[in-house]
Length: 130
Image (cartoon, one colour):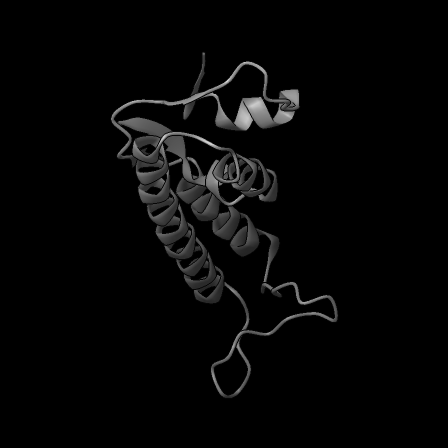
């Protein structure tokens, strides 16, 4: 099992690094493990995004039809700073929750593969260098 934070999973940089990992050549067993983890991550991202939107909808202003009101840039509008702060606290709590990936062993990758320090930082819990 590998633990990570929900907030990390939804970062575009994590997705980019993970997709790079998905394109690397590896054993069939590692491919199977990684594809299973990919499905878990994809599912969790959808859950986190839906939950985040539900929290925003709970706190933001609504129009006469009960739909959330947004400004010209698409940002939700709140009745007060206090309500916005409470919304952000709830979202922060969701992002800081741990998520367990069902990965028995880290994926072994060649030390010859080029990777940026940022990519390694995002993937270090999923990979081991051989």
